[in-house]
Length: 519
Image (cartoon, rainbow, N blue to C red; front, top):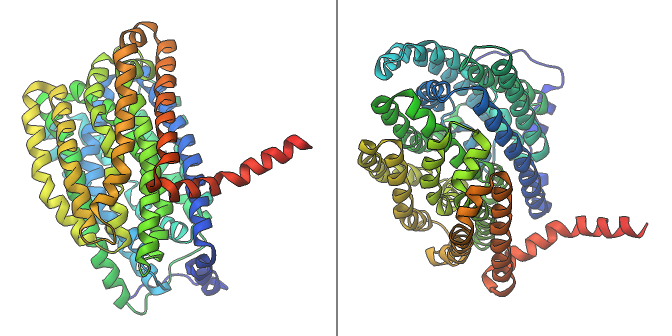
């Protein structure tokens, strides 16, 4: 089967240029470092936008509004993942790719996007019955409509990532995020539409992401003459989708349980706390992973270089993630009060329990780089199969005690699964578990020490002083952690390669700064 699409003058040459990656190998390390720097800068910007949006919308909307959206999202986002089928990751991971393969994957994504939209609309009445809330029906239908547009932009984003065009990729996501946030805030501020402001935010982000990605990536689909390579990429993607299905199932199962048992208000408190919990991991893992996975995929035939690059990336993401975790844990309830404002005290109590998982959550997410870069998505899915019963059991144990009970058992489950998670990922990779733990343990211990020191000595003072106490406590925690990490990186040989990469990254900027001062 083939599909005829309009031909564009010189389109073949433009498409081939968008697919080419041979030119990247000459300075792969430099490009990866540059990608990491761009990713960190973009994520700081994204984090600022997310925090500001959370803070403003929490003051304009009610917990019930967020609860309705969380109920709908538990269905729409869960089903919508099947429009992607892991095919974007397949495009990034493959060492060689051609026009037929990418066009075939594009058409599959688009077809699945349309099918998923119809499936979600069909499920909307059942979801409204399950949650016993008729508002969920129309919200689910509205949130399903942009799914085909997002599906039609998956391969464009993958090609930007594969081609290491970090700036273009990050600009599109930041612009879409910022404009969507402004739209939601404007509607919430000027109207009484409530949760529909959040639906408008989702719509705006989807439309802008689609348009900007098509502008940034000049590749366009064409008629597929040979589907043989598409089948191989589809097998890779289906295993990844299996993992994402199970992973998302357990991540949303807590929302389903809390919403069904305790209602939209309790779910609203829980959902906002959980979204705040995910900020550090999403903000760090996503962009750094987008820089690291293409580089690791190009190094599959050089195990020593692959191992060194992965361990350095693991060290970097752990340094950043544990630092944020330490500050969040030490200032959990005052932080929620500052961001969300009055009336969200219960979210603060829930977040204090959830934040205990953060120290290992960020580095645990990095194991996905191992599976994807080495093409081991089958093992990735097997891990999810093994652990899903653990997550479900933990949520069920905590459910009788409300959202706080679910938060507590979630944190316990994360810590219990941390070491097995790293061991399973390392078993088929060119590195050993002890090499990973040698990088992780000192950094995680430093974060726990810094957080515990601030909570023990300043906890009551931080809570009593409001924003001043929050910023002072957060700064003190970051300072203690920074000193401990600096000592570790300076003294321990296991961080020597990471230190060299970090110096190589910042040296050009410090040199320019010194030159500017001498002028």
